[in-house]
Each structure stands twice: as structure tokens, then as C-alpha cells.
Image 1: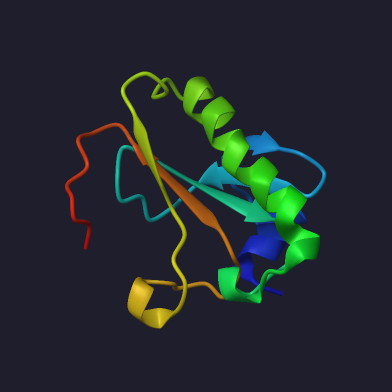
Image 2: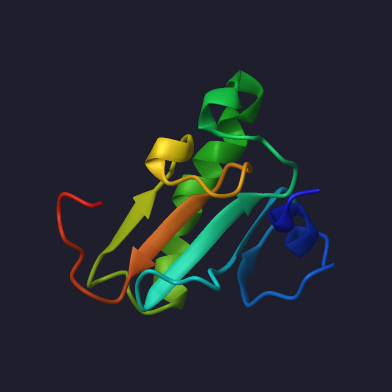
Amino acid sequence: MTIFEKIAAGQIPARIVHEVEDFIAFHDIQAQAPVHVLIVPRKCITRITEADVSHADMLGRMLLATREIAAKLGVLESGYRIVINNGRDAGESVPHLHIHLLAGRALAWPPG
């Protein structure tokens, strides 16, 4: 099991901000911004390139949940960035698809 599966199963504590049947969102313990939340499917999909059409509905709902999460955390109006890393060179550190929601400060462009 990945660390994200263990968090989703309640085996590892986390500061959960959003939870539905097939995905969960929680604060990243290695935050890269004042607000840094990970939105993670409960069932492991290794990375976005491993997702298929059967995951489309859930992935869409995960993206749409960013608005509700940003509103809960008070950053909807000021803005936020969403990021999906794919592979080692992109910064992927856990082999379990997840969306980063980053906010709470001005975010530079390009990232990296």
C-alpha cells in the first residue's frame, strides 16, 4: 500500500479537508505553499498515464472539488494552482496519482 492508501484507509493520521467515497483531500506534510492540499483517489492509480476512460468521472470530480476545497480554505478568490506530476523528472515522489492544490502566496511562473 502507498502512504496515500494508508491515509485514505485511516491507518495514518492526516488533516483531512474533503472526503467522498472514491477520493480524499488532506494537507501535505511537506507543504510548498501556505496552503498545500493533496487530492488523492482512494484506489491507487500509479500516475496519470496509467488512468483510463474508467477513471474519467472520478478524475473530473477531483478537479471540480478543487473549487470547494479552495473555498473551504479561504483561497478561492485570491487564486490557487493545481498540479499533477507524472514521473520522476516531473517531481513525482509517491507512485499514486494525486492533484496538488497550492495557494496562500503569489506563485511564480514558470514553476520549478
